[in-house]
Amino acid sequence: MRVAYLANYFIAGCAASSLLGWVASTSPMAGKAIAFFVAAAFILWGLCWLLDFSVSNWLKISVNNLQAFLLAVLAMGVIGVGVFLCS
Amino acid sequence: MFLKMFVLSGSAVILWLTPLAVLDKKIGWHKSAQGLSLVVAVSCAIGAGNIAKRLAEENEIEEIKTRAITADVVDEIATSAYISQTQRQQEAEQILNPREHLERSLALSYNDGERSEPSDQKQLAEPEQNALENAESERAKRALQLKAQGWGKAKIILELWGVSKGGSPKYKAAEAEYRRLVEDS
Image 1 (cartoon, chains in turn brown, cyan):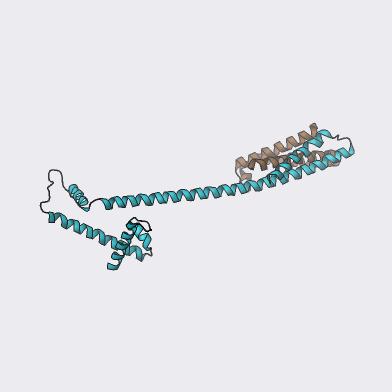
Image 2 (cartoon, rainbow over the protein chains, first blue to last red):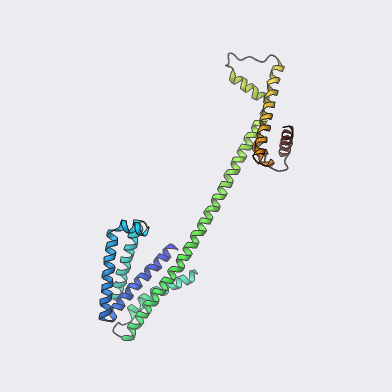
């Protein structure tokens, strides 16, 4: 059951990424806003990846869990945007 | 609950992929339908995830309960095995002849060459009687101590005579002896 709920949240993340892509494609202004948001999120992701020990202490989770979460977020973003662009 | 979760999961995947693959982004209402279906897909996936999480937590609680019950049963079995072992040991000790006890203790105190047979039967009977009296007085003392500590009769009998409470003749005999010891003291 744990796998089921993780899979469902993963699908939600993928669909949300596709939705962001869809919002970005609606108008140039929205595209710029989404691009800014994606850039900020990517910088934050990179910082979390580099400062994994500090962030895991701050969030009170293990480093392995934090890295798994970050990789899952990256995979969700890539899959969601990829599905939107390839369709 | 399971059915709802599976329906929501399936809907989420279908609503995420199908409109993007089937509908044309250049047509206005197709694009709107894609956006709408993506929003619904996210909602369905989150709903299914929440249901699955709740079910996972309930399963975890059930597993903890099962583990606790199993541990209780194992503990109960171990306790009863220990009690029955102690009981068997005490019964075996009671079965052994007091004379044999004495002979054993005498045999331990002498070497083979120095061993001598008791010439007088009275000499053997006297220490035997003393040993019995000592055992009885120690048992009475211990019973009084346990009683003073607030132990119940059945528990004291189980501890000192190794007999569980019930209508067995052994228990009745032990109970009678317990009464006699306590009243004498």
